[in-house]
Length: 348
Image 1: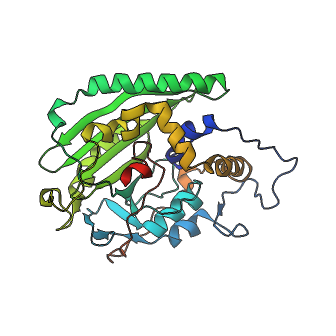
Image 2 (image 1 turned 30 degrees about the vertical axis):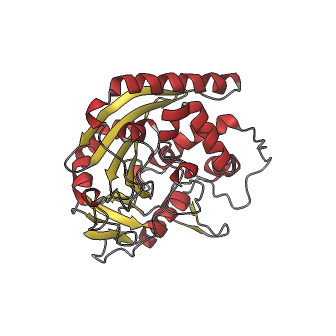
């Protein structure tokens, strides 16, 4: 599964089974289709640019990057670059063909020197959950083996509905990396291996959560399963680079002033809604919140088939050298790209 498709796989699997969207195949190619040539369609539907032009238009950052309103800081090594929220949204929508989100992420971390349009590329979306202080008191008591069995059972329950209604099943194969909590750094990370239908290539869902005084930084790797070794090699650098700023740090929690989240570490892995009501109910909640996605996805799938061919890695354009300018602060945002994230109703 190409990297440009991986980020939408979980959302597709969760939302499409609960909808019935008729999307007829047109008898002719779209008027703007370009046959045999790679093109990028920008937000202006009438404008098409080459992959080289698109990559060159992205503003890559290096070194020290401030997230949000002095929320946190990334101190990136030379092996990583950063796109702020606006540029990350352009890559996700125009470059990788995902439906647009009302609120862009804080940004994306990408490998330096690799075109973000190449199949061997990967990315880390960076977002913030203003969910309150998440207690880690239960860290030593969590049995992740039992949790995995429960999550797999919930997935099988959801798959029964999918198959009865003509949709492909999604299998939680297991932990690609078992959950690990760094009690000193207040950082939790884990990875799931997912299989979509009869796909020959499994999808990697690698997650990092950095606990803060008032919420959680959400970092999600977008990659294929065959990139696991490369991702695992990059995780230490991403973990070391990410820290909350003074005033936002976990140790600065004030019980008299700050809100405590209604869930603990285990729910960050299993999904807070899933921990309460099961995966099937979580997917229904997602459907209520994001009912428009199947319609947008229908158009996205057609455009992928009608307008674009797989890019030859040899033709991929490396990311240009980034300037050392500090990223413009972005307001914390939330997207639907991570199915583990809490729903808005429980944030209040």
